[in-house]
Amino acid sequence: VLRSLGIPTRVITNFNSAHDRNINLSIDKYIDISGKTLHFTEDSVWNFHVWNESWFIRRDLGSFYDGWQVLDATPQERSKGMYQCGPASTRAIKEGDVNLDYDSSFVFAAVNADYVTWIHYSNKRKERIYSDTRKIGKFISTKAVGSNSRVDVTANYKYPEVKEISFKISYSQYKNSLTDDRKILVTAV
Image (cartoon, rainbow, N blue to C red):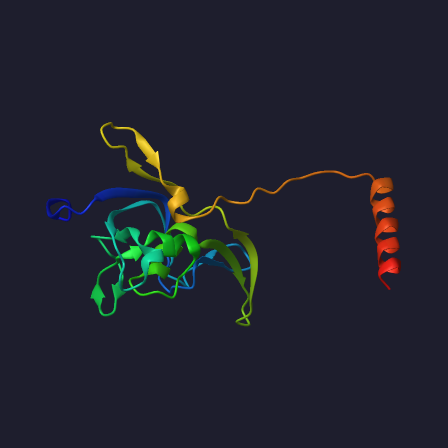
């Protein structure tokens, strides 16, 4: 419909799409001390989810949020009392502006929630035992114009994940750096 009105629109697919029911920006899994899954939350991770993007000027939010906007024609949650989702600015999602109207927090979680496992003890105490900040929102894609190729648009939704770098340093190098730090500290005093 939006294309017929002359509004640029495209289909987006998000793999490992989070469905954050309580909008806490994490997908929480609870287990008991034996490892059995407890059903304390309705959060889930879908293999994929599809929505549309349309190109809008956002006079209501400011020009910073102009551009591609998420519109979900198959919303699973109520928003302001109705089953609707969007238009949420992809710029707002990427920048983490989750307090804007139009479901930006829900879409942010769909592509960038943390996947957290909690152990729940019988005394109502819980402890976080695992957290994965990279699992959600993979290969966010659309179809290329004029071909059947996939175009990766993940960078429109989130910044690249920071890679952990492992390295080894010898004790003598570490010891020397400590000595150098003490010299700087003494000089500064």
